[in-house]
Length: 276
Image 1: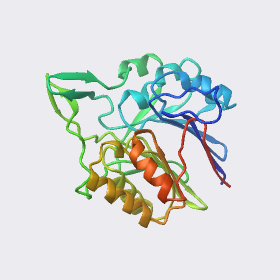
Image 2: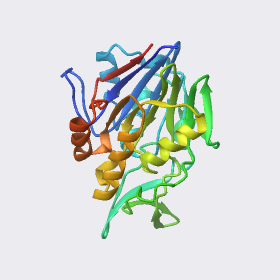
Image 3: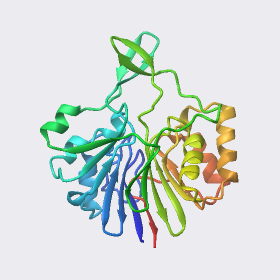
Image 4: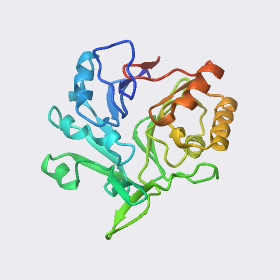
């Protein structure tokens, strides 16, 4: 039942200075005899980092992509140069054309590959349609998060281009990965665009087990003062034992956690979490 989670890439470097850091996220998960990759960062640098960390990416069972933004899916093309023998798991709407819009300008923020690329590479993929999908015993993908916490509002700059016009991106494609361990649930978040509290509450409800650890991005970097305070109080009251949030969590939130919560660690490039 052992689980080891290694952060292959994240925005910030750690003590291992030979590793690349970049704005993005990628976790390598080993559970018993199974291997998963949750997100791929924005580039092929995860392959070099994996080699430095003695991580074998050529025998993956699953690759799970949290949502269709470049900093979470951009490394997939490079990954296919060393292995194609895995099943790719995606949320519905993953291939929507995602943009960031400000005033009269827009920037493409989506994936650097499409369905045709997967077909050409003979990559087996599936979309998740149910709220909870079990990949192997005690490893789940969860999606379809109810928007319960009213303060968790998606920034209106995130858009989808459909039929020649922009519309708000609801991030219905966002999925998370959760591993049920002897200590409780380990929840891996990509960016938490639907809201960190919404996602964690729904995960607990779906599996009916306490959360032991949460790793990944919470997108508190764009939270207003009230929402940030609510989120800090939410984490403070939660019984989880490990808080390893980073990436899009933002410096302000991470600084507050570092000072006020002994359960927090900055989950940077090269960090690992092990549960026996």
